[in-house]
Image 1 (cartoon, rainbow, N blue to C red):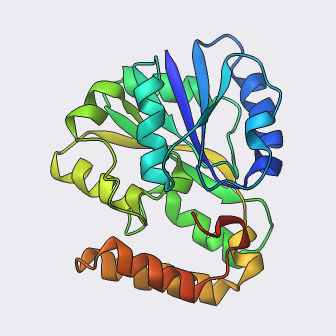
Image 2 (tube, rainbow, N blue to C red; image 1 turned 30 degrees about the vertical axis):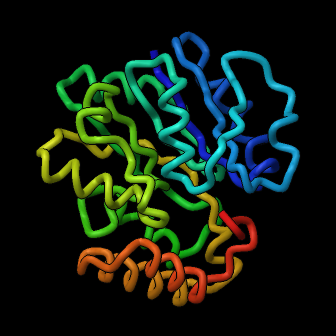
Length: 236
């Protein structure tokens, strides 16, 4: 069984698009969807009307790492899929996950493209097709065997920013086998629309460098909030 875990903070509009898509492409597969709603959430997400296999969870903590860990506590699957609310999965999504894991890998990611056509955004997306400095980011939708996830110690809840990169760092250290699936997710370009291509890229590069140098998660989050305007993620 596959458990899709979605951390959500003020994401009601995106969820109204994402959840029907998951229901459509999930036909024929055994799966569940757990939407883990931040305690700081300010919209009406918890009152969305979807039946099983979708369920909404009112988390007692905020922060993606805490929300995703909380979701795994309630999940029934032996495979975890961690997905951002503003990502749209492609056809073949569930089949690709099962094929990747059945072929001997313990985890995997997807390549992606943006929902806006742009040469520069296409350039960014092209780097997600192979291993690189930005591999492991949440937009690539980590999927992993439950046993492997738990053996690695789950997400670090003290990592209030870049929890995905911190977890991937432990994956690499433990030599967890993984594959990047060349079936593109569609990722929102809203971060670039609210800021600028140059500003977002320079910010991302700086944060990754500082993360690799060992800067604390709290300092990284403060810097991130100063560098970028992200109206949809305030106070999370």
